[in-house]
Image (cartoon, rainbow, N blue to C red):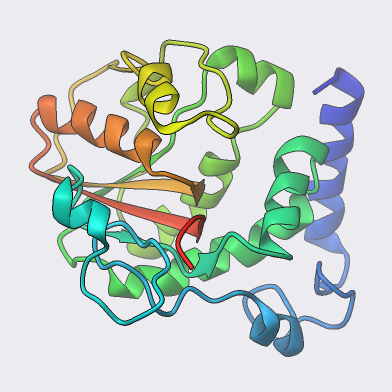
Length: 236
């Protein structure tokens, strides 16, 4: 993101704070969670999903085949939405076009979805972003989503892990390439006293990023890890 684009993003965020709220999907008055009732009803809700990785399923099974075969290193993952239209378009607009007005909707949905999390979560960790990508984009959308969530849960927002490798985007890579792409990507920067850390991100595709980060946390002594993302790709 250029300096001009970053300034535009900041200006947009300030305007959003002072102007009357409107639904970012259609422009009508906001009813709840930062959107109008009609658009909320039309969102691709992820109501039938794997209890472990949040992958959308066709039937109400407890675990998907992948989690039965290779359980992830986190207790549970929750994604209130599927990564389908218009959610996919909105999240890409946030990340690549600085459309910050979508963030309150997704943050509100995460706060609402957090009621289904284990009750012993005691810290929130946004998915780390490499400093080069942060410099280009001007912000980390995971941080923007995690900040109100941590306040809602009344737990600290931590930044004890950094992304030390400037990895390629996971999208477009096959399974083997995704795993190789994330090898050694995360590194602990300071000790973590929390026992159950919640990883927060905007979208989970295959889950390799969350797996890798969760393993880093577990090796650092964190007893339990959970994941909360706005949307989940794959599945049905």
